[in-house]
Length: 460
Image (cartoon, rainbow, N blue to C red; front, side, top):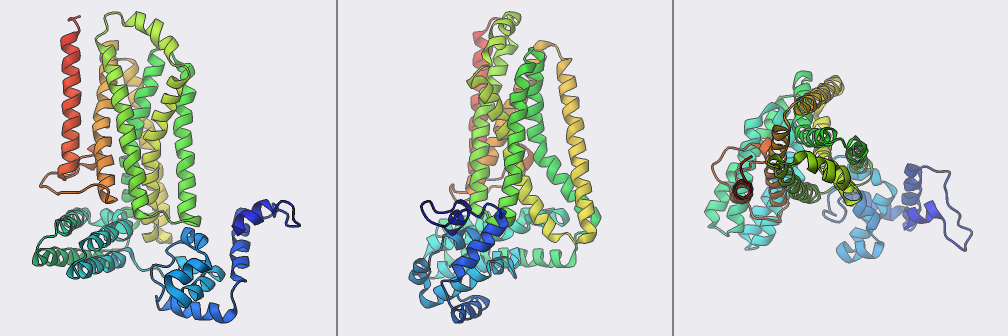
């Protein structure tokens, strides 16, 4: 595309690379050059069409604008599509201006869903209901949770119930009842956010809780694995562990930059990334947890440490350490970035300092917690040391499995059947049949393996 040509030049021509320009300047030049294909009259008509929302669905974010060609725009929306493309190429900033509030987006998608259902198109109705959560409510969730956490739980439960009614093609009156209840709750949420500004105290508590909640699981994993390496005399492998979490932080910073300045990560993309990362992390933690548990009953653990651990962490073993650290941290960083973006939108100048204070306090708390875990682990008898760290890994594997299933449900990849059950997001417990069933299967697997190990090994 134009950006690549400006950045790299065109070999064999007089077009040389504009390496003296930074990335932002090259993008600005690319959009300006692309706008030259259209006349001023087309751009003016496109501006009018854009302001009247006559091109809904043509271009949703900068990524789709970059990929959109004049032929694509004309094929999708005819002359109006071409005119809107002309305007947006000249004024890409319009994509970020005047966007409706997230809860308004949620209500619009919800109303569209009911309209599709009345028309007999249950598939489109389900997709619109999913967008009501992913592209609407989720964008306001963190700010609303800081002032009305009970309302957040009610809305999430009702959204699951509404999607279930649509998916099962229930009677129209039931779908309408669910729609009405959900619309009422969304209206109440909008009033709460309008009437309750994000005070410095609420901002501090919200920022503190987000980082502490999201960072706790990662800290437990890193501290446990680090303690195992120190206790078994493999300090030389610690750089691989550190490389994993540092890479995850760097990737998280890149995610924040991309989602803030270049592309808009879709709701489904967010949930799929979190879901698959959590499931992969659960599998790795399950393996490591069983591995550690196998060492708690070894009657020759000294020989094991000398002959196995001292020589096993090479090649793939070291890469596994880095992978564990990366998966544990990146999933939490990814989710934390998205939560803070939503929270920052509600914070005025008087609240931003409190947000930074909450982040700093949570970071200090996590650092202290890490020190306590590592120091206490190093003083445990070896039998207890391996057992405690194995338990941490296995419990977190079950929690990550719940997070992963929930993420795929929210992206619409898995069905979600709500049940009356407490929600404990810290442990990955979500009140749906699918998440609870998956975790029960995993708990049964862990219990079965532990019982088999106990029977197989002679008493020490």
